[in-house]
Image (cartoon, rainbow, N blue to C red; front, top):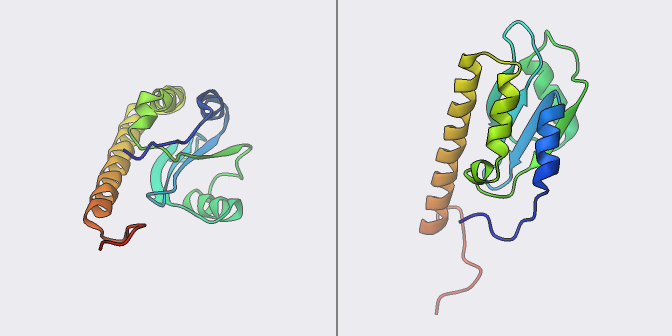
Length: 144
């Protein structure tokens, strides 16, 4: 699978999810980010899959464009997740995301979070298929 060899401090990840107003889980292989904004506002919290950005400034700008009625977040954490999407579940991280949302969001927002998870999983399956068939990927060795 995609999980080979990456050490992640799960306790630190869980702590950041529990404390930050805005959490971004980056999936570098997919070039996507799971954005979790727990701040209230006219529409309540937000969970969305978004393209990765190059830096923190770009993420703040994208948040400002998405949620112009809200002030700049007091805290934002950016977590690179080099493991598979399903490893979020097996590591207990997804459970923490849902628990955090249960504390600040309604049932529809939690359903939206689960849809975002399924979207990421689908993107990961497409990426895996493309790696197997060679689309957008090249081998590191040459066939003879």
